Image: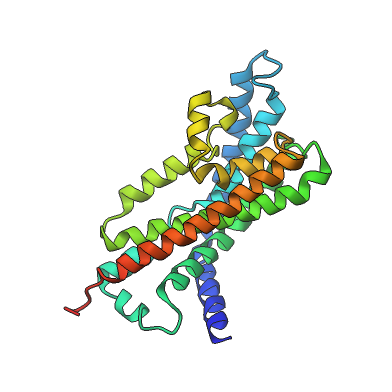
Length: 265
């Protein structure tokens, strides 16, 4: 019970920290609204007079881009962990003596950051619906599958963010790594460009990476590109990646523990 109380407190403090500067939130919402409008303009221009590309019509393409942009705001905030600074200042030594382990602390912080970004994403989705740039899923019965796949995608992103946070035990300057990770995740997960438009060989490579399970899987279910048995198999694939990432985090953390040096200890 004490561990659960500590987790809740960490999540709550992370949310409050993210909401400290309300003007930043207002500007983030305004920026997302502009992005939603621009995505509609760009994708309609790209399609031109084409009725569909690879079986995807302009309305689906615009809706996909808008939904992906709103989800990405919540899943990949610019600052998802303060572990780097705590390692640099030596505060991680105190963190490691707390009753709640360091890995649960960082994961709880990441969860709080994600929850703090949800109002921004919700505002973007509301604007997309009001402006008609987001269409409803073609099949309402697939909504439960989409929600489950989205939740599992969130878990995968949080675990991968945690792995990125742990790199600070090998390098005290992780800004470059985080920038590459954000760019790579946005591209390889289908958040920037739908994987439907990727070359066949590249899409086959992505099948062996966890990025696809972050966002493209739930979005494919939302737009009816995956349904029935295929959708459930994709969800099972997400569960497999969660198990793999948990194992990787365990291995990386065991190695990271042996690298910690605080005040000569």
